[in-house]
Structures are given as structure tokens and as C-alpha cells.
Length: 124
Image (tube, rainbow, N blue to C red; front, side, top):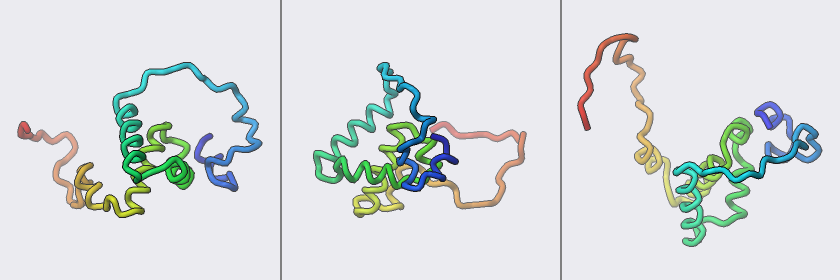
């Protein structure tokens, strides 16, 4: 489902009942999961074991994703976004925690360098 189809769906992007474009056979072959996908699966299991998340809240979080996110995120990308949403809603995390962990976008709109300008960086 693309973002436009998701927008048109009356029940949300997850509501695909009767959409004939989706009747094609599913590819059910196993695929190798990326490391981040394995980690997301482990995080979801840990959150569930700790009582911070359950399958219904995860599903609801996925269903609440904006249509463009729902259409473009991978399976585990949807899990990550939905899990984060639940943790923020419940106050387990706050936006500051998330920004600190991810490295917030710079707030300065001042252009620091010109395109093509040579710069030096320090090794970390």
C-alpha cells in the first residue's frame, strides 16, 4: 500500500479490506534479518516481559502511525515507531531522553559552511 492509498483508507492505513491490489500472493520465503531488526525484536520482548508493552498496545501504536510512515516503514520500523510512541505516552521516556539518545538535530539555522568548502574534523 502506498501513502496515497493509505490516505484514502477510511479506517486508517492498516484497513485494507477489499483492496484488490493487495490480493497478490505474499512472499513467505525466509529472509535474513538485519542486526537492528533482531535488536528490535529483543527490545520488544524485553518491554513485554517488563510489563511496559503488550501486543494490543503495539498493534494500536502501529495502526496510529501517519499514513506515509505506515506505507514506508518496514515491519520492524513500524514496531520501533509504535514502541517509542507507547513509551512516550506512558512517560517511561520523554522527548528529551529520545533526542539525547539519538543526537538531536542542530537547532541553529546559521549556515556554517559553503558547498564545496574544505573543512577539518577531529577524530573522536
